[in-house]
Image 1 (cartoon, rainbow, N blue to C red):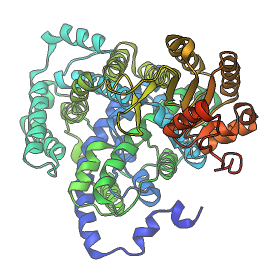
Image 2: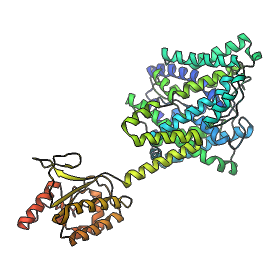
Image 3: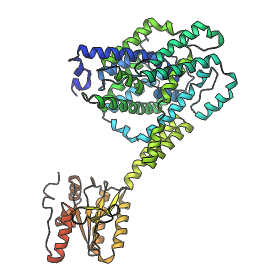
Image 4: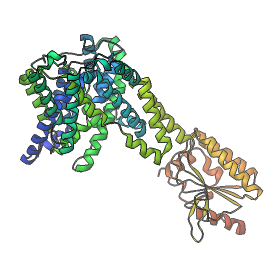
Length: 577
């Protein structure tokens, strides 16, 4: 791997211009200002003190800016990963304790190592096993859980930590009589302010304005005396360097959630990176390099007390809209956070928790993708039910279990689709040499002496029974007048050993019926398999044709002249094509 390939930033650094700096400076400051309240809020979701959200917004951003292939992706704490962190560590330690914080830091290291190894071994394709409906269902449910988990801060009441929506709602309803109205008013005011500013101009940092509003309201009106919970003293200065906890028992306990976060966070990041890259066209997003960049960002972050990070939707959109041209925008955002840690943390003493809750709620409720469910109901009912099942499983079983159900559903759908592929009986379109599915084209010509079949998938052990059963069914319907079975193999990409055995058995059965077996449009890999399986000689080289029409013409000619027809002479000469 060349140095430019491993450090993609070299490609834009060597030609960096003042015009790029102008856009990067504007975007970097905008996203940095937005990241201050978001980072603190998302740390609270993760069960950590707010300052750890700022720690996670420093070195990881710089590492990604240098190693990532996206020039607009804004890396840092995000709601989804924060909730997964809380879900995974919450069963092992009490939130906010030293043991909990140590596990969150170790989790960042494990996530980083997993992502780095996936990238090095070019395993980014693994995320393809989670289908879009599953991701949509999981994301919507997780967003609902995240948002409702903030009710205790919005209402100013004490609620037990839970990752089950029904438990949160029931307990919140039981606490309605204990609402702190000052806290509730500030929280609602924050929500209205953020949403209102967003409608006016998305580039305006609504969360920061909400933070200013909350601090001024609490300080100016003396609301601490009325029971409004505030952030309080925020540690000043940069995070100290240190090693994660490499205790073997801790690592074993965290590995399952680390693997889940590795895949889910990469999916979130690569999705938004590709969406933004499609607008720019002047660079390419490389999934495996993205894994390496995100992995090293998390590994590096773990040495400065950061918890897991990834690319986020909202901040990336703002980064792009604000004019980001390169990764320098992220470096500027990180420097702004560093400045905040060094000099500005005392300003957040009066920040009410209700404002952080409002920031979280506005951000995550926007992730509930009800439009996708409506679209799938109209377009694809099987995908719709995958979305709904994943959504319900995540709500009722929990975050980690919801991911597991989603993975199983995705794999089950892949298996189902490949074991029951599309297979069609073809007929001739009148007046042409084209052959089409008789079930879709009612006017095609069907001959009693020919059965023409197209199989639209690889032919392997898992779908052999469907293939043979359908052919036997159609052959039985043709009756004793059937003289040839023509298999259009244009859509067959591979054959395994089980498929070769099936074709050999089919050939023997057809010979017993005095019926020919002809192939058309056989691809190179399939030709190779047939040659290696010694089936070419048994089927006969003169029974392979370029098109269905050639096979039909050859069959008709043989009936009348016993000739050979237009055979595919190159068959055994180019088995590696």
